[in-house]
Amino acid sequence: MKLVLRWFPYGDDSVTLENIRQIPGVRGVATHLTRIPVGDVWTMDEINLVKDEVNSYGLEMEVIESLNIHEDIKKGLPSRDMYIDNYIESMKNLSKAGVKCICYNFMPVMDWYRSNLAQVLSDGSNAMAYSHDEAVKLTLEKITASMIDGANNFSLPGWEPERFGKMAEDIQFYQNVSSEEYFRNIKYFLDAIIPAAEELDINFAVHPDDPPMPLFNLPKVVNSKESIDTYLNLNTSSRNGLTLCTGSLGAGVHNDVVDIAKTFTAKGKVHFVHLRNVKHESDTDFHESAHLSSCGDLDMLAIVKALYESGFDGYIRPDHGRMIWGETGRPGYGLYDRALGATYINGLWEAVTKLC
Image 1: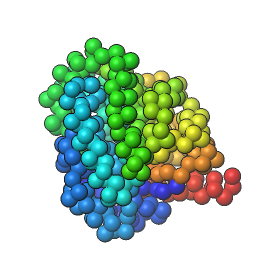
Image 2: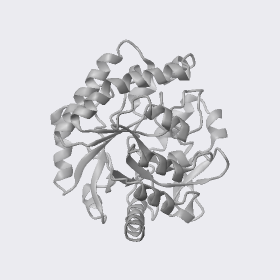
Image 3: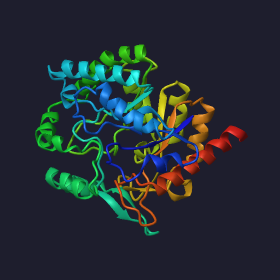
Image 4: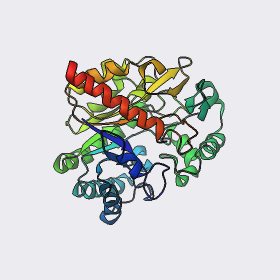
């Protein structure tokens, strides 16, 4: 297991590499070239610029989160072949830089959404939260405005400004796309890029839908054990794997996250893990909590134990943290609570390795 922390380059992060290297057990970062538009090739110059900075602090850059997929690929448009070629070229360049794992998602239009980016919790901290009833009442304009206003002047992955102008048009497009057709588009993409992944020694790890509840009648892709199985069977290569995001899956009350961890890790399909906890306020509403099991509804020890006993040897990062101790920054991505989460994960992993 390698413990990493998500980090954003180009000065677009309140957390520094100097901060990250001082967290015990953290060996590298999961990062993203935020200034390259979705669909363009990630050049060696740009990749090495970020890699050299990461390496200068004694940290590794083996995980990319995310190499986003152009909407034309998701729509199955004729232009998708050009964007797939660009994607493979980016993969080749990342492989030359030593990248071993790429996290991505296939959610249409919106990569993720929260109705509140800073809900105040009972202990005075704040965290991201989701209310389904509130979300379905909002217009697209109000949703985008709330995300921009709550970002604290940081970029939000999946909410790049260049997407905003076409969101309404894209949502309308998907009203006429069946789930079967959408999964055919996914298979087309996987069948094109997985042979390159095999040749380049890169694992692909799809991230679950976040949140798992439907919004704007958009297709849902990965939000349950059954849909994970369907997705991974679209291309059976071992390179076609899962980012086990305990928070995204745990937001669905129907999901047994321990069982999901055990099942797909045993199949060699879990390449990356986002460990975080959630607290349900109803079947569809939740807020993100501290990582500790007792702070939310997930048994974090049982999840880590299932990973270990099933032979997990990939990357783990503490996922979204609360804002605590007066910190401000990108929602979910401050330093203090994620550092506490990393320490907690270290303790859980040491316990299971010595006692199981």
